[in-house]
Structures are given as structure tokens and as C-alpha cells.
Amino acid sequence: AQSVTQLGSHVSVSEGALVLLRCNYSSSVPPYLFWYVQYPNQGLQLLLKYTSAATLVKGINGFEAEFKKSETSFHLTKPSAHMSDAAEYFCAVSESGGSNYKLTFGKGTLLTVNP
Amino acid sequence: DGGITQSPKYLFRKEGQNVTLSCEQNLNHDAMYWYRQDPGQGLRLIYYSQIVNDFQKGDIAEGYSVSREKKESFPLTVTSAQKNPTAFYLCASNEGAFQPQHFGDGTRLSIL
Image (cartoon, rainbow over all chains, first blue to last red; front, side, top):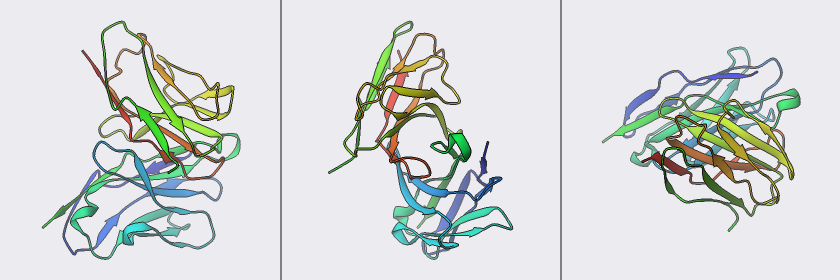
């Protein structure tokens, strides 16, 4: 089974600063990778997805992520944080083989943006 | 607009009682999923269904049951066998393998 590790359960940045949320995965085959955002008491919303077409993936709200196979990483970045970015972020990897409908999620990173 | 509707948003259960959480989608997706979310633990898969009249256990299926009689509906029953049911429950759907999942807004279940 795949696994996803999100380094840092809580990240705090100042408004206007760079946002970097880390995600490492384990996969024996080329993975499909996703980043989701969750606002309080709501469901998850897709930010972006990697499906092997390009290593740098652009998503909504100014976020992007870079797939690095050598580092098994898919870190999420945004050049300048906004107060509205405060939320919890989840990295997920699609299972392979017979379980390829399933997603494995990381434990999440709570992003706080300080004024 | 297409989407996933979960109801109710808040639900309270008495000890020994079964409760059913509703999930309806109008996205025409074949696959549907139920997750449980607890603080600091991410999302854990309870059950999923790839097609009508078929479903599989996820990682934490004990104490839960589901049915998939219609493509658009995938209700989850939390039975009295689930000893720690207090959590936020999320329903999702997608078109199939490797596709992004779309989520409802969740149901928060608490024990009275």
C-alpha cells in the first residue's frame, strides 16, 4: 500500500510570505498525486493534481506543486500568503493495481496566516 | 449545480442506537466513498463502492454498514457496534480509478 507523509502538522507564516507545505510519498509505480484544502466544518476541495503530464503543476488560488521523483516529494507552494489561505491542507496519493480507486491521505498540515 | 449533498450536517446518537448518514450525488459518478475524520489523523476510509450493488470494506469498516442500491446514493449506517462513533464523516465520489475525488460538506456525529 502507498503511504503519504506530511512534514509539519502546523505551519505558521506571515501574510505575504512564502508558503511551503511538504509532502513525501511512497510508491512502487508512477503515482497520481493530489493536494486538497479543507476549511473549517467543510469538505475537501481539490487544489491540484499530478498525473505525469508535467512535473510543475499549477492549481487554484495561486498554489503550485512540483513533482520530484528522485526525492519522492510533491511539495505545495504559494509565493505570497493571503489571510484566506488559512486552512488545513492534505496531500493524497492514488493506490495502484487492484485498489486504484482508493486514495491514501496524509494526516494534514494546518496553515495559519498571521497579519 | 452538480455536487454531493450530505445530510444532516449535525447528528446526535444515543448509546446503543443505529444512525444513518445520507450521501447523494448528481455528478453521475460511478464510485463513491465514506471517510471518517478525527483531529490529527487525516481521513480514514470506511467503505467504498465502485459500482451500483457492489461495495468494499476500507481500512476501518468495523461497526459500519453501507448499501449502494442507486448510482446517486450511498448511505452509511453507524451501528451500536461502533464504540467510538464521534467524528466528522465525509462522503466523496469520482468517475473512476486515478480520478480526483469530490467531497460533500460532511456530517458531524456526536454521542449524547
